[in-house]
Length: 71
Image 1 (cartoon, helix red, strand yellow):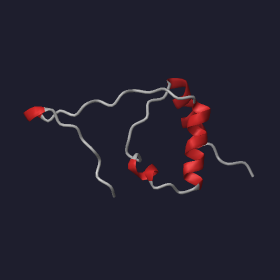
Image 2: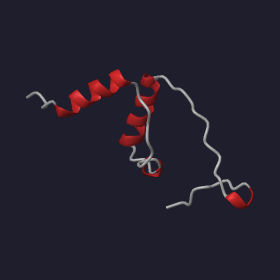
Image 3: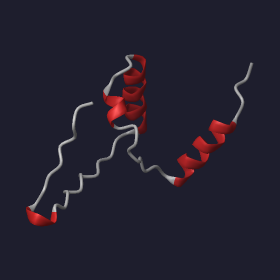
Image 4: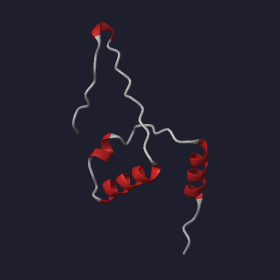
């Protein structure tokens, strides 16, 4: 696995917070779908990152994950 770059400022060794960005959900899912289909290794680099989503999307995703697939 490739090491991650960390920025250090002086002796306190505080890392700079990454900028927050916004992206259309359709574009985000299209990119993820393609990366999953191609088994892109960069997905593993971000597998432990936290993603912030809206409360209503969280509720829908939670419900959807508990549904049984239809036959």
